[in-house]
Length: 376
Image (cartoon, rainbow, N blue to C red; front, side):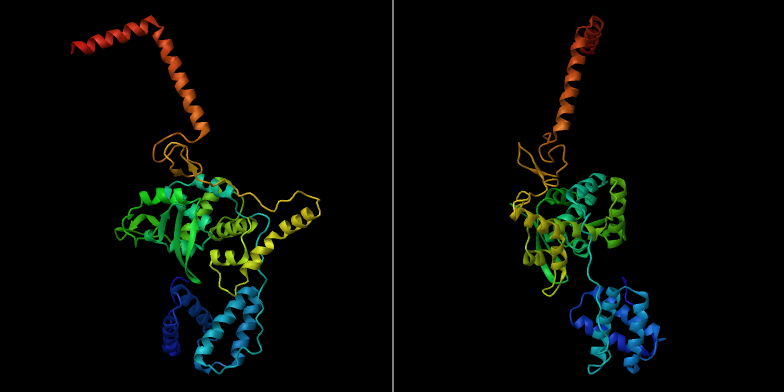
């Protein structure tokens, strides 16, 4: 539904007027396209009849047809969009008075969400800093992928605590605090092709089109995450919304309250999504009851998973990605294993040099080479 449908014939003018109405009411382009496609499907079902002659019967027939072939949530959305259209076209209509909206209860996977450990595996599978940055930011922000891809370079503001991004979502503009993903974003912006242009897309394509790098699209990121999951050996459904779901689940388990979650996630005041996520803590409530009765230890203050915590350089204080082996600013070794390997390599090199010095033939050859160098 990237592009709006093409209306021709009898209904063309009416639908153009409706599109204008939606534009005037400040609906986003993607939302307008979706609503127009819903009307298009309705008219196609009725052989493109004159929409001004539609009756209650035609609307009910279409809804019954949709219920036979689609999930309750899909039909629920159809009803909402068609109701909006006919309210604009025929304000006094009674088309929907006998149609009950049945919305499928939200069921989210509670047993296997994306975790910080999974994200770290995804980061290790990345082939570019751009991919690392978009993976880290998508999880850390818990934002919708459309919000992430809508970011410009100037929407990222670094401060003493990390960074803040301003996204434009369903509920309008909102600020999101970032912490763990900040080093990855800094490294990406440093090599961004348009880093000095605040209005440039934060995440750009790897190849130019029309002599310019373009804004990444959703499909590209979906394919990227799928590929990363395969390479990382993660047997979960890894897609942009799965990272959002995993992050919000983590925040709930860490004690984020409903109102805080609503603001952080960008849900409308009447949305039932917070309740959907809060029910994920049912197991935690069970543990809490047991702890009250002294049956299990009190775990009222769960510890945050530090898997993605930035690694601070002890020499210069620079915060680096969690899996960094060297400081990106002063090159100090940060990883213990890397440090041990370097020490071992140096020891081996030192021993080899000592052994060479104890070899008369080697010493004589070096002396001969030095003498020739002086004679030149």
